[in-house]
Length: 155
View 1 (cartoon, rainbow, N blue to C red):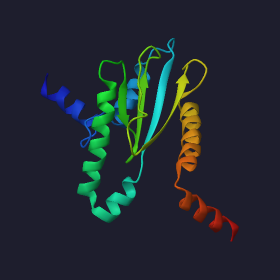
View 2: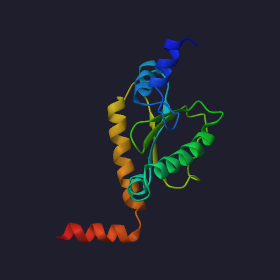
View 3: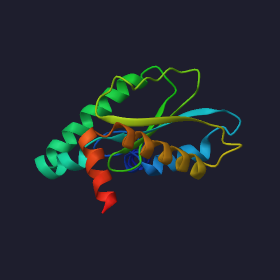
View 4: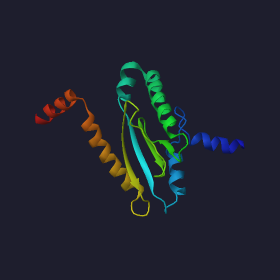
């Protein structure tokens, strides 16, 4: 690979996790086959902010890498494309015939949706996934956090 190509690949890869970043995602979205249907998973890593704040960023990085490596293992031998789109948010695209099961991975919240690029824009897909993720995170909050949130809303 030429030096210029290596530099471009480096700029499209998240330095910490080694997965594609938002630049790589933009390229992927331009190249997708609009005649195919995709499964898309939006992942949120739980408690990363708290770990960074209380234990430090080095500990947070290790925590994040551990989770990402577990996800990568689930994606072996699939068509999946894996992207980091924010500090603790990730996207996975894969074809429906592949099997991706993230339910065994602890400390993440995720939602999935099928995507037909002919009928739904990427922005609309993300709005749908974001809404589902917020509902899922609320549903999975520990009881005491839900209680505190409900008390705070009453005042």
